[in-house]
Amino acid sequence: MGKRTAMKRKEKGPVLRGKEDSKTEPDDETEKTVEDVQRRIDDLRQQLMEASQELEVMKGDTNGPGGSLLSSSTIAVSSVHPAKRGYLFKWQDRSIGWGGTKWALRFVKLDRGMLSYFGSHEDPSPRYVLALRRCAVRDDGFKKNLRFKPKEDNPNPGPQVNGAYFHVFSIYQRPYEEEKHSTESSAAQDDDDDRIVPLLRFSTQKLAEKKQWIELLSQACAYCDTDDFLKEEATAIDDARKQSSLLQKGTLPPMYFATPAPRKLVRISSIPSSIHKAEDYVKTSKREKSAHSHSLTRNAYPPSKPMHRAAASSYISDFSRGTNYRGLFNLAIIILVVSNFRLLLDGIMHHGFVLGKILDLSHLPAAPLVDAPFVWGIILLHVFLVCSLCIEKLLSKGKLGEGFGQFLHLIVANASLIVPIIIIWYHIESPVNGSILLLLATITWMKLISYMHANMDYRVSPEQDAFKATIALIQDLDEDEANLSYPSNVTLLNMYYFWLAPTLTYQIAFPRSPIIRWWKVASLLLRLLISISLLGFLTAQIISPNLDNLVEDLEPTGGRITSHILAKYLLKVTIANTYAWLLVFYIYFHLCLNLVAEILRFGDRIFYRDWWNSSEISAYWRLWNMPVHYWLF
Image (cartoon, helix red, strand yellow):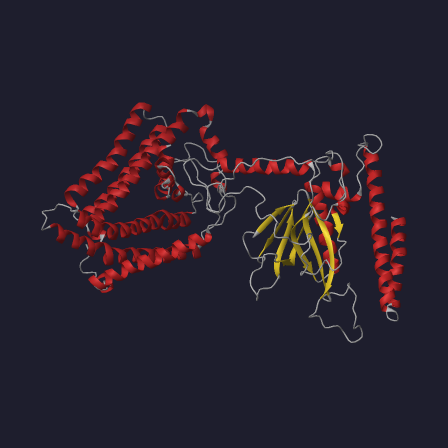
């Protein structure tokens, strides 16, 4: 540490003197200061190389003289992937028109041997991506910025003054020498200017930034010509294939990322990493005024520059990688909104605005609580719940035989479904009240079946401690439920929590959320009110009038549906019915079940999965109703 500190103090001297002396002699001393800084950089690189060699010797990883001792630039290439991003001026070598500019500001990104540029940093996908394999960097010098206004005390600024000059550099494809062996590494400075192919050309107004880009690009070019780059490319392709294979069976792939196409890797004279040096991939242009853009020489951007350099699939093909379909999705949304607004407008023109009819409640059926058969049906459901609880209580105490107890459970569970069906068939006239009671009866029947089977498993297999295994698999439990065991779960409170919970499968304890978020409850209630109002408006404005007109058109034909009637009402009723179905799904499976789960602090709220991505009927039935799927499973 002492030597390094002394070295740093010693090296600071010339820089400070250069700054002080620059007040009197700016031009000469500035050049000396730049030379001193460059000399310091070279010394530090040499010290880094020596330190790395000593470290390798200490670790015992050397394989003889020159075995694995790497230079400083080689270490940077092999151990760290050069990465940089920022704005640069890009040369538009195919610009057409008299008013267009030849240089355009682009956001450039260098990462893992890939150089890409974007229109701006907000663009989701690059406009062009270049793999730097068999490439090198060329320093094209600088040219004066005609729009720069120098200061009065420095009318002729040097290249180190920011904004005074455009500092130009380019990336080109190196000529391929077939006669060279794969273990030989030639310097880019020896590349024949007549055989190189310029690919990209950039400029910046800062000399330091240009040097940094050239250094990092040369390191990236050196890395891309190693075997490590080929291995990482193959690994990336394998990972993409594995990721695509992890998609759930029967579902569509994601909209943004498509399944990657298998790509054949072509080996081009890979050189071992140990002999690559970043400085071998930097070339300085020998041509005068190489930074200017009006030259038509061969080593500029010729008309023969290859535009097609790799096999690639079309953007909307199945093998396209990373295509963003967001614009097409937005267009589909616009078309959907416009077409359905036309359908709504057509209904208003033919049938009038039905909002006044919706607010008139005189035509609605009586409330469920006024309907006596409906109320008695609800009371009987509670009776069946209590009966099932009493049977399980007797079984847990051994006062009922196992076979007879299960027989009584089946009688009670089936009665909870059959009795409400009889009440609905003979005594309830309102379809709304009958549908609600039938839904509750079906849910109660499924819950009682699950309650019977789960408790039987807890009861008849105490040696396996089934309830302990269940508790061990459940996360986010309340403290009082962490040690819950059978038959302490056979209580009235436990039974009614299970009956009210948004699930059909019984277990001894359920994951819980920490608190009730009342703001979430208010949000769900507000969305529930809006969704129900929208469903009522859709039914009254489009579905009901079209069904009435359909009945009138069927009367002259004696109820026979003709092709004219089918074509007239199919799209109208089908589109509106699809919206109604989606609203019913959203109201029940998302709003209602989440509302009940939030009030009861029920933790697991996956009531459905991404059924909209289903590519098979079986996948659709598995994903759209998870409570029933769990019950059947």
